[in-house]
Amino acid sequence: MDGQVQSTTYQTTADTRSLDERIDRLEERIRRGTQNGSMTRSEAYNAQRAVEALRRDEALLTDRVDRLEQQVRATRQDRRDDRRY
Image 1 (cartoon, rainbow, N blue to C red):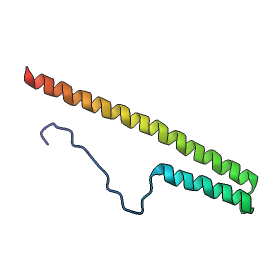
Image 2: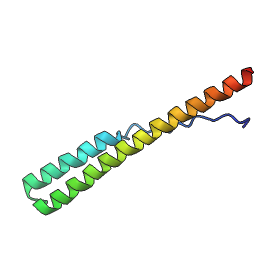
Image 3: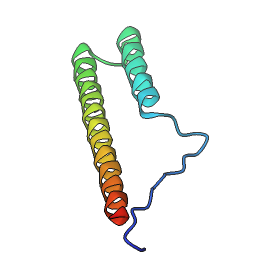
Image 4: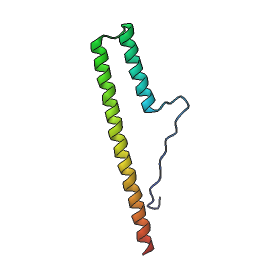
């Protein structure tokens, strides 16, 4: 490469759901488990705490990625500006 940053995209398959959809599905399974008795209240509580941790981690990582993207855009702009002078 000639010093330029390449954009990376990840291909997904038709079966892949977004992270939010997958987490929503987990929460629904927890609700069903408590309703039909296949999970104890304690198991459901622990599972729900784990799901909440996933949501927090996803939000933190999304924020970090957004900030990194802004930094990359600013760096690219700076390099373009430097080339003009």
